[in-house]
Length: 423
Image (cartoon, rainbow, N blue to C red; front, side, top):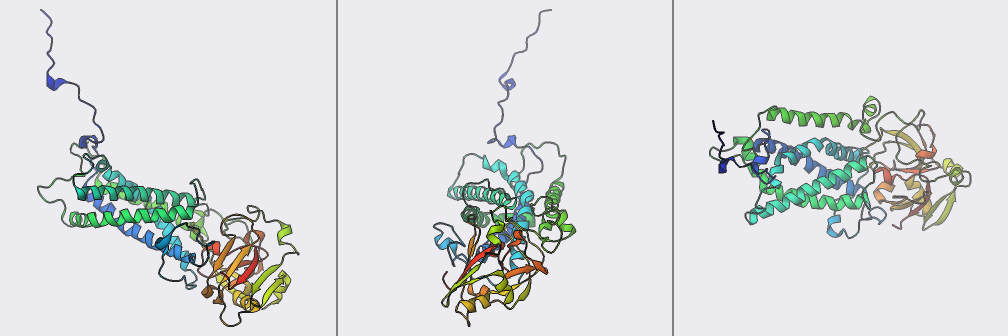
């Protein structure tokens, strides 16, 4: 019999490969408006907390006091803050910055899941169907770009990996305002819709524009996907939050540089950022020839460590809390009140602020300015001892600043000069 030949019809032609702009390219059955709305509401609360605590952290640096406290160029009105940073409660910065960093880490799985849930929208054509849609797309660009930039630089800073060009403070500062512009705009445009979906679901007759038109068979429910995101956040919480606590919790903070065991035994066995060797502080710098210089209207004075120890000594139980989010528990510091040194410099009644200079010759915050309320607080010390023992070289021997509620970098180590009144 003659061989039959099948005639190829137009409908039998090879199917063109789908592109990300084709809705059928995205086939996950998990995507949907309600799934995205749940993640969006969680991010709304979490990112708002991040921005508020970020502003508080900025205020804690006394940015208007001296350029050494805030080197952000051209900040203009973006450098505003609402109040001078207080000294009480003494754990204030430990709380606000700990929250800022911990919440940021915990939100990483939520942010990634949210971006995954809406990624088909990023490829939708045409790019803008109306003025309102164009505004939405621009806000989305600012929001996604700003969020990824802020989270990436923040996580690198936590890990002490300064891979980005320039100062972390400057980059994170301007990145935060770019992110905020997109965040506020996107929230105004999308929050009513998200609330409506969460309350009433998708109205009958309206398509779920985030759901796949041709989904694959389900292997995981949307509730299961949300549970996975929550489990990821919980895992990050457990393996990072302990950097702010002593004991067992710190030992399981495996994802942070200040996790693990305490740095050695003895009274000085609590966390630090910079060692004396890392900033090239030598025994010759801190030996018997070291003198503290105190300047003010009464003149300039040189004080040895022995002369400082002969002055009236005071104690204060204060933590160290750093911008990376780690902190110590309260340590018992002992030394000379800053207000007493201000009186020696010529301010016996109402001490002004003080400009502090370290023996450290390079690096950020080797110089810092403290506000007058910080100098007047009786717990603000030029510390000479901690936990009943002299300071170790890594904790700032022969003398360091310790101030309640101040960021760790303002608690200057290896102090060389105190200048009262000129900031």
